[in-house]
Length: 184
Image 1 (cartoon, rainbow, N blue to C red):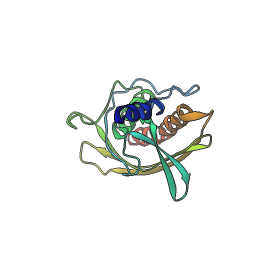
Image 2 (spheres, rainbow, N blue to C red):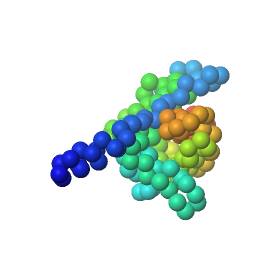
Image 3 (cartoon, helix red, strand yellow):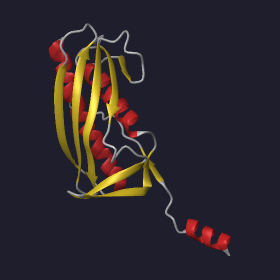
């Protein structure tokens, strides 16, 4: 009897869906001429409330929902580092942008990321707040920035929400790229 109940319970669970963040090819953005910037992105830290395999939805200011059937295909911190590295490589037209955990030796800059907020609401918006530090390898003064983005969700469901998170990360990458260009 116990086996029948166990099998019945499993049959009623919706199948898991797995999601990844992605770098965005933004139409109308012309990268600068090929550069030799060598940049290491990461490490990234996340709030414990979202540093988990499941997607976390914001229901209200004080309430979230952990969605068991919608999961990240990889650890979220690594995915964020990878997307920002991919975006920076495109924005700066550099082949020498990598995501942590590479050794920082041989890089011109290291970008440290502290994700302060990574919220999403279905059929509404993705909100991302990142404090970032651009540290030159030569020991110069670091540059600090803080980017807050609210990106509208275009469509229904988890995939549309994840796409909005990816676009929000593109905005963070754009600000970091501008700081790198300004340092020359």
